[in-house]
Length: 333
Image (tube, rainbow, N blue to C red; front, side, top):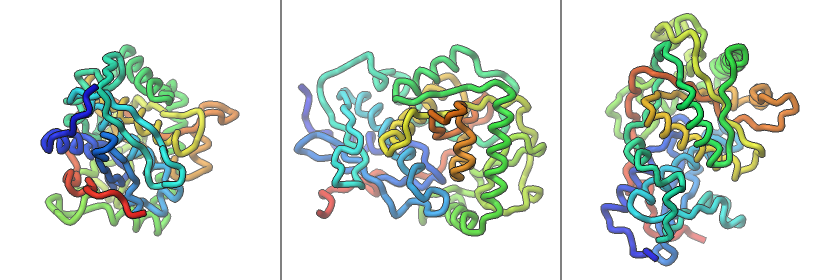
C-alpha cells in the first residue's frame, strides 16, 4: 500500500487543483492541512470568508468546499493514490468539513480515475457570456446526469415550459437582491475594479459579464446597482439549457455532496466543450428556493441552477496561492 509522504511539488499541485474549484462570489472559503500521520487532508471551513446576508446558514459555503473536495479527489487520483473521503468526520469539530485520506488501494472504475478530468480542472471557468443556439446533445446530458448521481445528487434538465418558470423565479430573486441594501453592500465588497488588485480574491469587474438585453436570462448583477439599464447588455440565447441540481435530503453532508456533484458535472461539461454559469439567486430566499423543487411535495431539495451551452470561455478569476490555504500546524484545540 502506498502511503509515502507527498513531495512538495505534488502537494502544491494538489492544493492548486483544490483551490481552482468554483465558490460563491469567489470567496474561496476553505483551508487545508495534510496530516502526515494518517496521510489525510483535512478540509476546513474558512468561516471568516462567509456571506452573512446571502448565505446565513452557510449552505453555499458547504457547496463551495464540496467542489474543492472533488478537485482534491481528482488530483490525488491523478498522482497515483486512491482518495477515501469522510464528510463531517468529527461532530465535535464543526469546522472540519471533510477528510481525504490517501491510500494505495486503486479503484480504476471510480469517478476520480477518468484521465480527462484532471486537465479539465485548469480549463474550467464560469462563463457569463451569451451562448450559441446549439443544443446540448443528449449523450452529454446523460453523462452530466450520471456524474451528479455518482455523488449522491440528481441533475434534472426541465422542458422549455418549466425552464421558463425557473428563470422567472430566478428573476424575482435577482430583483429582491438588487433592492436589498445589505445584500447589495455585501456583494459589492467582493467586486474589484482593478483586475490586478492583489489585496484579495473575489470578482474582478472585468469578469462580471453582460446582462441579457431582452431580460430573458436573469444574470446576476454582482454590483447590485439596481439600475439594469445602466449595465452592459447583449442578446442571450432564446432557448437556454438550464439544469437543476437537487439532493434527497438537506443536511450539511448533503450540501457537501451537492458541491462534489456540482464540480463533477462542471468538469464533465468542460470535457464536452460546454461552458457553464451558476444561477444561485433563488437559493438565497427560502420561499423561492422551495419554488424550484420539481416535486409538488418538495421531497427533493434544490441546491443550484446551472446554465449550460456553447460559447466563449469565461475569464479566469483570481485564486489564493496554495501556501495561503495550507496550514502547517494542527488547529488550536
